Image (cartoon, rainbow, N blue to C red; front, side, top):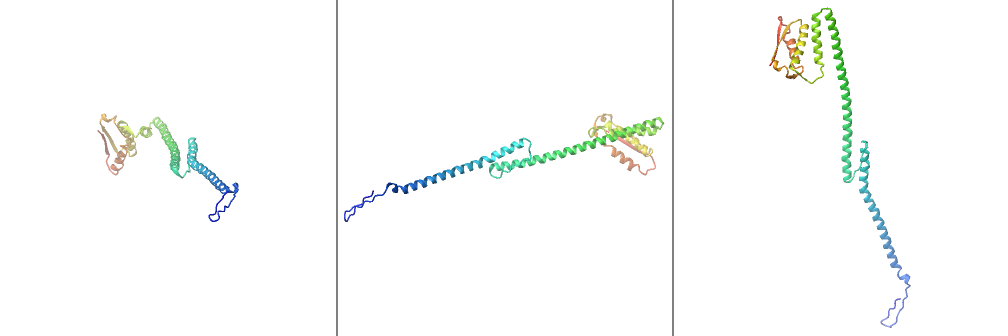
Length: 241
């Protein structure tokens, strides 16, 4: 109730306002504030959930995919683009690509290695077949008394055996000289004793190692080019000191 007094007439005006009408505006304001707070609280919760999931989802996704990688699945793509986890994911994607490339390279290398091993086996079988065949021919020449053919076949068999030895690229000087002796016997037979070969080497170097086939191209060029077209018998001296 409101009772104002007039200064002129001293009259009083009584204004009666119902209590429920007096607090309508206040109630409206309180209700609006309450609704606003509830809306803001809901938005805050949703925002918090969104931020939390945006932070936790990439590591969880990364963890799941790395478990697949640990199980042997290298075709996994991380596919995380944003944030620090995204940088880690890009690095892992690059690493997985490199691993797949290296595995493919190793697989191709192993295939090539198997092919080379097969070719080596085949190339190893062929000289052995030839060596056994030459021994059979040598045996027949010996029975028939063809001493020249027997000598050449024996030298040729020794040359094949030396060529197919499954060793390193280094042999002793004694082995290299023995090979050259057999090789020059074949050259003498081929060129009808057109040259004589003499060997002079220090016995102290016999056990030293040298490259395999080091002397053969030198001997071959000496005979083919040095003695070609001469009317007399050539002399070839091999000296090792």
